[in-house]
Image (spheres, helix red, strand yellow):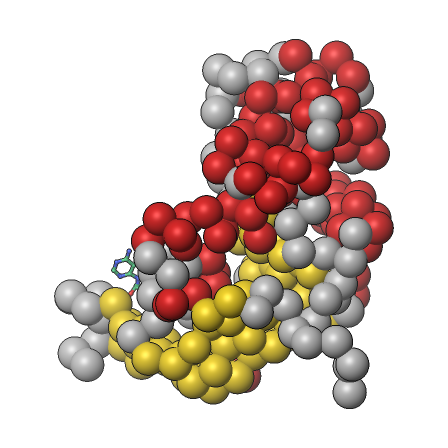
Length: 233
Ligand code: ADP
Ligand code: MG
């Protein structure tokens, strides 16, 4: 058994989307340890994004507990949750969600605006953005380019740099590699994990694509960690 306490714990969590496409998600127990890389596999519609929203505190469990970095998410107000998320979780979105007209370095520094603790860990933002780009295999000249002018592969690395800056203890990625071919996906994960391992950052990625499995420390299946139900609930 690991000696350290988990970076993330979900216990008896239940969340239900109501309405015509009602969906009920239950997770008895999920624990992520510091520095581990975890892939959660599930088909489209299996509740992966709902699970990530619960972890990020953008939706609140209707029962049970979500504890991130020792903090019970439900004990925070909405604005405290926003600050907590910004400080503790680096997010890589499926569509990257970069600001297309802003420069790459401004995109990378963006989460620091809302995250005091992360900002304090960084010091010189421009120098850190440059270091991350170099380590993620991006040429220096992209730093001042508009994010919208980059290739998909480059945009994905910028999204990774934005998640990594200021070393949050947890990085959450929602199918960020689905737009890339297998070799590029694999290279992307190698680069991301080299950075996350250097700071003992936990990475949790959700995907429908099992081809990435062998690069992760642990692979979980939505059907094993969740019970779901659909329709009139
Ligand atoms: P995945 O990411 O695995 O594709 P999601 O978590 O996005 O799965 O969605 C699972 C189900 O939850 C959907 O099929 C839908 O029924 C419901 N759902 C997801 N998001 C919403 C929402 N914003 N409003 C209402 N229902 C939703
Ligand atoms: Mg999804």
